[in-house]
Length: 230
Image (tube, rainbow, N blue to C red; front, side, top):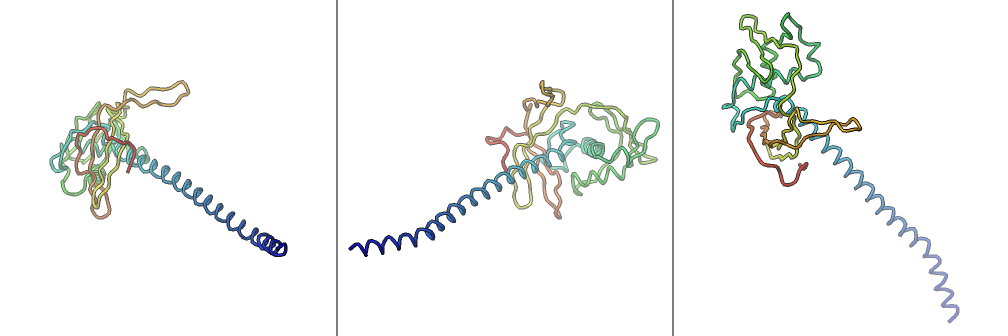
């Protein structure tokens, strides 16, 4: 009897290390799984944040002028589309170095405006050029030289965008944008800017053609039930 007990004890001792090792390995596997899941979640949140910020940057010149809504880009206000295209050029990083100035301001060739126009709105419509009476600033067009003159002055945007929802399908991306009044931002005591509450929401449909996204509709909408998801 004692011998059997001893043998069982010896067996338990022999098995103790490998079993313990297996338990440790399983624990480590679980820990690694949790760590990987956490890292993936952080990466996902970071990527999502970056993703929304990219849409924000893309829509800055669009929301800037509080555009008239349209269900189809072919029925949009042409002057507003040209104005958005010019603002898109003005807000690009290389604009001050890329375009020359004349006695009245920055000189932007219509070819550059058209290029930006097609990148934003696709090729379903053809831009029509002329003087643009924009928000807070006029863009004068010289039909002889094909030049838009942009006064060198600052303008506070009507709205700044805050993308709160992105819904994707096979060939479209529908972006819900909170419109934040440009003159309603405040500065906290720590120096950080505090965003105002949204005045309204817009649903902007981006249609994919040949791998590129173009604005095809801008419509009024309500606030999404769950913000910041995609």
